[in-house]
Length: 112
Image (cartoon, rainbow, N blue to C red):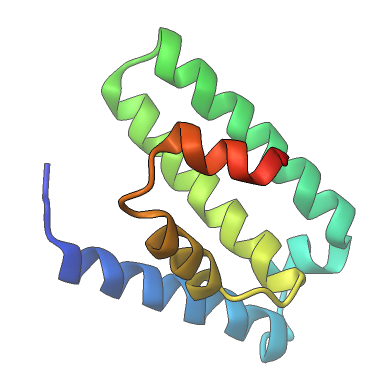
């Protein structure tokens, strides 16, 4: 297993760009374009399906299956963010802000 933050960021950046370009520049049919054309609700539903498949893989399937399902989940998350025009780096900013805070304390602060 590769543990390289630079490569991970590069892959994410390229995928984010590719998804954005499929939305704004792509005229031909691609799976990504089909998702955009199907609309927000379809993209959200697809993300939910992938989340369930990832959870099931985490419990009952191989590590390779879990990795594959996680990749699908991340892709569909990025598509949903793109269709909502929310940048992935905004998500990373929130995660950065939460670093060093107890998960219990952070969750309690959101419910109050």
